[in-house]
Structures are given as C-alpha cells and as structure tokens.
Image (cartoon, rainbow, N blue to C red; front, side, top):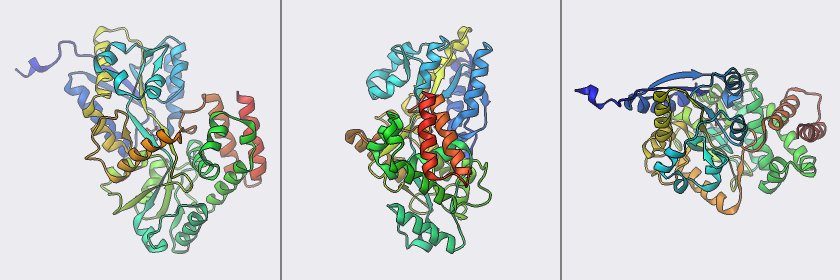
Length: 405
Ligand code: BGC
C-alpha cells in the first residue's frame, strides 16, 4: 500500500553545491529528506571550498561541456550571466502557484529572474557583518564587555593575547581575507562611503583615507592571528572559538550554523555582535538555487518539486534554523529561532528602512566576478606582503578595479 503514496513520476535532481561543513551539511540534509519524501532522488555534487569559488569554476566547465546539473547554488548578479547563455530553466509556473511575487521583496525577487522569468530560487538572507565571540574568554579578559569601536576591539585583542588565547581566529584564503576586509572597511568608512566605494566603484572613495585606514587596521589584525592561519578553512576557524582557543572570528552567520551543530547557545557559550562601527548597517548575501534546462520529463518534475520546496514555509524554517541565516520569506515565524537570528531580522528591517542595507562584495552580491576577483587579489596580496604599505594597497585596489571594469 505504501507504494501508492509515491508520485507517479519519480525523477532525479543533481545538485551542485559547496555546503560541506557540519552546519551546512545539516542544513542541506533538510532538503534532501524533503525531496526523498516527495519520491525523488538526489544526486549530490559537492565541490568543497568555502565561499564557492571552486564550485563556480566547476559549474562553468560542466555547463560548457553541455552537461549541467539540474540545479546549482549561486548568489547574486551572476545569475544574469547564466541567463544570457540560454541554459536556465523557467520556473514561472511554480512561482505563480506559490505566489512568489507577492511573497518576496521585489528587489530580492528581481535578482532571481532573467528577463522577467524566475530562473533561481532564493533560500535565505545571510548577514556578514558579525563578530563571533567566545563568551568565557570575553568574560575572563574583557569583563564581558563587547567592543563597539576599533580601539576597544584592539584592546580586547591585547587582553586575550596576554591571557594566552589566540586573539583573532582566521583562515587565510582569499575569500575569507576579503570578508574580513569588507567588514573592517564598512566599520571604518561607514555605510555611505561603502556604497560609493564598493557599489558605485567611485575612484575618489576607493582612493580615500578611509580605505588606507581600513588596510592599516586589517594588517594590524594579522598580528593577533595564530601560525595555523594560512589556508585554514573557515569552519576550522569557527571551531577555535567553539573550543575556547580563540576569542573572535569575523564571518557571515553561516558560522552560527557551526555553533548550532555543536549544540552551543548564544548568550551562554558565545556572543554574536555587529562588527565595530557597523551596528546600523547590514551587509548581506542571499543563497539561491539556480535551475538548468533538463531533457527528461521526470527530471523536470523533480526540478519543479525542488523549486517548490525551497520556498515552502516548512523548508525555510527548518533549513534556516540550521544554516545560521534568516528566512527570505518574511512570513516565517521566528519563534523557534535564537537571539542572533532575531537580532538579524530586526536589524535587517531597520537597515531596509534606513537605506543601510548593503550587498556584500565578498559574497558575490555587488560586483561581477572579474571585479570582485581583482578586489580579492589586491586584498590578499596586501595581507600576505609585509613590505606593501596601506597607501600602496589603496592605490593598487583602485587601479585594479579600474582595469577590471
Ligand atoms: C555562502 C554560505 C556559505 C559560505 C561558506 C557563503 O558565500 O553564502 O551559504 O555557507 O559562503 O561556504
């Protein structure tokens, strides 16, 4: 009798993603389980590498060789480039049935459409401008006081180091360097300056004293990192906070997924707080699943089911509880979410009203890949080169952006 509950057309989805850490894998499992309950099978195509750079390279080669997966993770304006290649599947029918236009904020919906048609499905809103602090270390060395400006931040770093802890937990990979630099820059120059420099790519803002000061702070931060930093994966940096070895990590709230997976509770084991100088801002990225043209009818059915599930209330709740992000669907109750998620949502709403909601350039939301690639290179080169001054880095960044445009 059980067979009767299976759909008539069982299909398969192959999904390319880079969610391989503990928290990420737990989040993805929610989707795999829901697909299997619908009777469809899931072929997992995981390409390790935080931030997804490697995954995007692999995706390109799969599509160019005429063998795209059914769906791939993606974020931001890059979706338009894929649309131009005429390889994406139209999800309008599912969107219409699920009333996506009424459900999603218009600017978020638009990112996931190509020429007015839905080709990708957003699942969350990640906030990037977070510090993740070990609570016991904060209490022991800083009297429990969360630093809110850069002087206070570096004093906390000094106190943590003196007490024998690693001050700042970091993984030296270009995208992590860019993530931390983005936050220092925002916290140094402020939201309007960030908008001018990194969204409008205004040369004056790029070459300003704010940028030089941000580079100086970034280099200073390096002196609080441990010798295991080069090449370390982001989730291993988070693990150092969880294990009480290091005081702070600056990272998007996918880091919270690691605390959750380890059974840690905000306010008790760790503290989430906005990066100094960024309390009123909200830098974000939105993870999405992009859909590719498919030949088989059964697999098209499976792909449409995937699209429907991704925006379902149930999935949005269960997934985001594990992922660390907040639901992209505004009508999901936050009752079961923790204090960091609740703060994220209220700051997100305030930032939307105050126009301080900023797309993250380090997470593909603000620039085309050639431009963000040039920024990654300039930032990482400076970080790894002890000879280069902050002034030189400022010049190099501005000229690298100009030539990438
Ligand atoms: C993605 C997250 C992911 C993180 C680390 C970010 O760019 O938005 O979903 O967890 O990279 O891989």
